[in-house]
Image 1: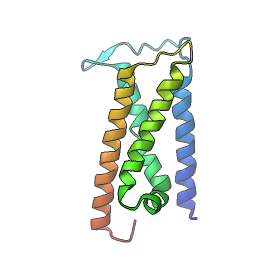
Image 2: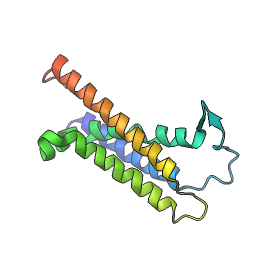
Image 3: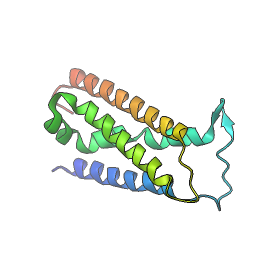
Image 4: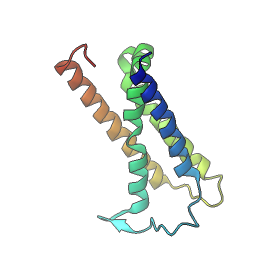
Amino acid sequence: MSFIKYLFRTLFVLYIISLFFFSLYSFKSFPVNLSTRFLGIEADKIAHFIMFFPFPFSAWFAFSSIIKKITKKHAYLLLFFTGIAVASTTELLQSFIPTRDSDWLDLMANYTAIFLGTLLVMVIDKYARNVWPGRL
């Protein structure tokens, strides 16, 4: 396996660890107020979107060859549903932590980020295969 694949897989593992840390750690002692609004959207929902948007990209760069080999035509669906599973797991685990709140709107922000990220991965991958066939 090439150095680049090792690098992307290592970065993916670090991303997943930090995703679970920031999703499950209690930040009550920090003076951060995520209940403020930006463009009418709670900062908390924006934070959820930002945390989950990179998931499809990092998973695709780390495991695209394996995903394509396993699923053939449905690689993007596997990518999407894996992201949905990770997002659902973090929200479910938050419900068991007394200092954290599980919210369905947080889950919707996570799902929206996963959906848009997967859609963008699909577009970029199709474009790259047409422009640079066999090079990426």
